[in-house]
Length: 332
Ligand SMILES: O=C(O)CCC(=O)C(=O)O
Ligand SMILES: [Fe+2]
Image (cartoon, rainbow, N blue to C red; front, side):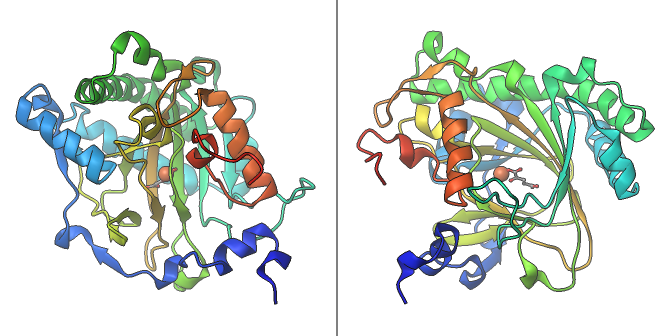
């Protein structure tokens, strides 16, 4: 048998990459996720902690973030209600700006969908935050989410800019150039539900990946665990703790930091007993802003997204940043 005879998506699993199932998992107690306090981020000691978290983990837990705990809980509650609606109601509720998706099957090169091992056990709503005022759904639960998001998005942008400026300072980036690397109008929220299932070997809630964003901010279920982060070759389960947010760094942050900061690999496991809700925010560079760094060729986020989409279509997976490396051979 020659491995080259397999479609790329299958080679990836056979060709020496470790299968996620074979890797040990542990709770984060043994190696706790770093905690950053937003209220004292101006202090030297907290800046140092942030620097270490960005370098060593690419992920941290944010406390004293200023979002009322009632708002975080209401978002979780209304999302739960929304997903509890019949499938047809959810499918029929969206048009235009907000979309409903499930399973995210991979595309074959011909464009037809194929059920592959990349099937994610989830359903979700995609909400571009800049479009909230044009979105006027009939479904009362979707309308409630919309109203909560109008409030939440102000907090998200405040948190994202505060963290970004602290990171830019640590990295000694010139804010004059790097400010457009974080653009408010690119902000989007994905509201997910991961169904529970007794046999967790059927797959993943979401397979191992890095985010393409600059920063991602997660309001994860306060009770049901699922999010796992790769740290020193070990998968750690990130504990659900109420009134805290999880922040992870994406590919764009890794690029602008010249690889000093880490776009962290993470995934979501299926829970045996309970479904899990998460409300995730992603923010990106302005679409046509050229990212300059010493490790990568200059590229815009548009270039990056197009390449990711093409790789998913033809190879079945995201290659991501290595495609843009200064010495990357385009033929591979
Ligand atoms: O649901 C989560 O906790 C994580 C979701 C995620 O990683 C993503 O949407 O990129
Ligand atoms: Fe992610």
